[in-house]
Length: 130
Length: 370
Image (cartoon, rainbow over all chains, first blue to last red; front, side, top):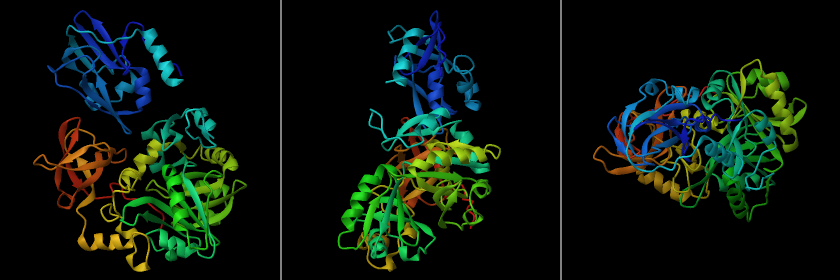
């Protein structure tokens, strides 16, 4: 099965995506991640105003089976959380790059280890076929 | 069978892949965790039926003139009370009362079949051989050549009746018999691990693929779904059936695990009896307790439990959002004082204490056909 990896996004090894627009950015989890997790039943969202370092744990997504930490791809301050996920966590399964977005941040100066869509797709292939 | 990563595979491995299963490692085996989704499969079992490949389970035959006295020595349950054609849950304990494994013992008349947990099979077989010294018994691990399926759910009986004699579909609760299912010689038992009515079927490893295909075929219009270990875990969790390595380990004893009913102190001597008698007399310090999350958060295995003063008092053994009940539930060990219904304590979820309240077990009342 081929997972979607939109070319205009950047990715992490922990399967988050980030869309950077100026000094703001939107963050979610990838199609591969939502599929691996299964039905998302709960999303632990951070407080607006909370600040995190790059790779800092800012929340968690949970399926029936397991909890999975969310890592912020770059350092930043939370400026919005997707409240729709509180009552409809399955949006992450249905539309991981759209309605299933998780947080918006104001990007702080700092370096995160980001991958292009191409690099991430290749990385996912190495996980699927070790 | 195994691949280069050293994980073992059941004879149904290729079928699982063809059905689109997600495969995971479990107890040294590469097993399907889900096909259509854990919640979908969970509902199928509660409302219709599910078919599980449980060929990873260990099966040990016990034969010989001393089969009964040997098993009486080995396990806590009174095996003499298991009549031919019947089965029961039983525990193997260490001399100190710690639980080596939980098992199901089937009395097939001319021998006993002991089903043990996949990951524990080598340990259990070695222990059984060790304990068999001085008894006139033959203990044979037949796991490799045995395939095992579980057909579970309210529609299981009607489905089995389509491919097996009426006698098999009419087996009583915990009954077991030999028979023919879809032309395949099988041992059929009215047992399971889901809290629903259903059957477990033992066949030769070479036949299990054919039986799997046939059952999925006849059940296609009855809501039967292939189910993975994810739903197996969520179903047993709601029914509060213990999972080895979580609710029970070598460091837990049957009384604190609320399995005192499986310990028959008056049946004569057995391994662990002295220790268990003492534990029962002195009373347990902690008890396995079911709880509901009051605050927002999901308890998971190994999360810390704190009393309301913030002192660590125990750990979660299993926890998840219950698909049937729609609540975030958990089980864990807490001091006896906190184990009564309505007691409150905190579960530490990602460094944050989240309030939980003790509730009655089981969360889901099993619907066995008795």
